[in-house]
Length: 101
Image (cartoon, rainbow, N blue to C red; front, side):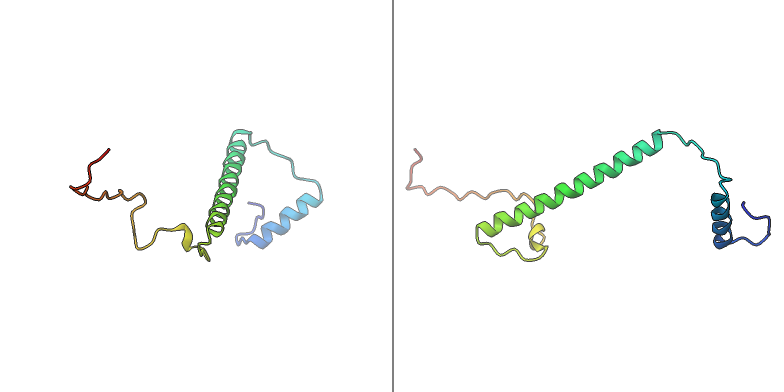
């Protein structure tokens, strides 16, 4: 607690911290590197994944546009009518009059 008063508020604490900082009465505290390093690595990984995802989405739209397929909006990234992601190809029954080679 920064203030000795019974009633505390963030404004009072912020004012007292600013005053201590101005008077150079605050000392630095070492918290270690491991937690900060892990947090930085996670943040960097998140940014990398977000950039990669954006690049893939732009590339997919570019391919569709090159094939003259309409692809406005974000609907192009999702399946239609709840279809499965990888449906099994249905094979047609062979005609009995045609013999396979």
